[in-house]
View 1: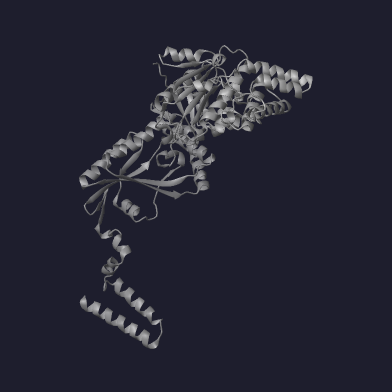
View 2: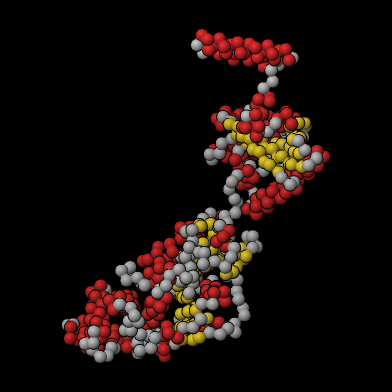
Length: 596
């Protein structure tokens, strides 16, 4: 053997010398031919040379791999190999719970091994030819069944063929496949034992498997052409898709913060982190008796406990303060008829900005047109300017009334004067916002029967809170406003004079969170898109109207017909569909209630 190697070396050197002498590179082809002949007849061994090349030196040494029926030996490691050859169940024939349990069981079975690798080999099938073969086979089976109606085997086979034909007609493409499970272990017996345990477990799921043969394992390792025989369609192999059956929102959106309730389908708690949410606002939509107020109070109480910030409720019916007191919690009741509001106080706000704010408050409260809005702005601005420039020594609505009388025609003055008289009943110098404390605050407007006056109070408080807390940005949640029956201020808010809509868009940057509840999407008025696009947590409570779920809710969450007809239209009190901003996958929850 050594003489053969020396001969090969001598011939190689000779060819190289001749190439140099005659300057003919073609002679190197002769060297290549000689080398190939020598390698083929075993005269030379290039193994040591390959080992010196980094790429080959770092790759697997195939000579150390031993392949036998059912397992692979790689050095001191043994790998049991299972071949899954039949998955007869179509996941579309299973209920959602059954499918969820089956997939969970599939991966639970694979937990018996320290490491289990899954290899899925897929080979193209001509769908036209396959469909023709199925049609031909179906025709033969019908003949058999006609002659022997009691042949249950033929009937079942025909059902399967019809199922496959239906799925192919729906756009699914057939393919041949093989699925291998590689179970790692430290010894041969353990590897095969684990493989057999997994095989028996899969059998319980109606998934058939066996230990792979030596040639099948070799075909897998060397990536030979797949000799797959089993033909399937995507519907039959849900275990090996990257899609989740459950449409759960991102984990980080629901795993921390305040407790909303329990996921009805999974039995796990669902949280909302107001700090990490894209927006700290919440909107609940649901009919009377759905549990909106209770959920609003519960969420607010948790925010008060967890964040130690002021929580401000606007109580229009008197039930909020009663429910809080019934829980035995301390609450500060603020009555605007007693504490008052202070529209004319600028509170370190530029007078032009304050005049515009008052214009917005009164325009939305009295439903003014643009002409009367402009008149209000002019009167307020001129009066504020006169006061802060020292032209007048006192500031109240009587001064504005006198100015209006001197500036306006009689009819316009009568209209503006009537407004001023209404405003004077509330604006008598005090500032209700100054009395808000850390903890629970209820602004009790139950004694105010006029919707216009209620709007003035709510818009003024919201504006003054924004002024107070907008001095700093990005310091976390600093105050929470709670609006039950939010339609009272949202429905008629004008696009050109937005107040609540502005707060929804800008509140996060100033630490102001807004929690609202209303009965219908229509209650949000012309700016419904502003609210819905900026609400961090959107909650739909029980509503038996299928059109509500189909035409309204579907715009904001991913739900299907089955969920609508089987679940959502039958929600009970306190049950709700929850959507986090930025993730259209909803959760169905049973809301949590703090009783004390």
